[in-house]
Length: 197
Image: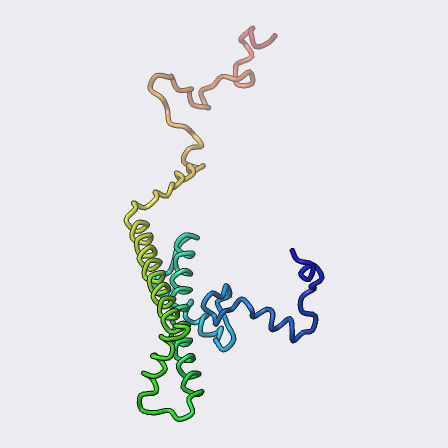
């Protein structure tokens, strides 16, 4: 690290910090954040809701794939806007635009920075990402729907306490005599010497 770099503290004013925070945007082509200046977050929220309503993802994997679809689609739209803005900016710098202004812009760009070709490549990359994520999402949902349903274990109902209060008689066990026929000390005649003791 150079001596100058060791003494550099970065931007100090709010304006400088705001400019520095946009250094990595690079016309929005490599931005990490899905919302850039001039874009409407409500449009992205509505786009996400529309895709979720159509596909109704289940679980984190399908949800991640759906978000990849939305992000790639959002980027495709972004690159189309950037392309139009670049052409409009070039057109605005022309002193006397002619009927062939658009062709002149393409010729000048192709001979120079070739920015429109770079934007086009980014459009194609985002379009491939969109279709790949959409294909993966459909495959994941198809696989989930083709799986047999998980059986739900239903517990047996509790026995009816009234019905089973007197268990049914078993044929191998002799049943007890009726209550009225049981002999108790009080019900025996007193002339029985065994009961008098």
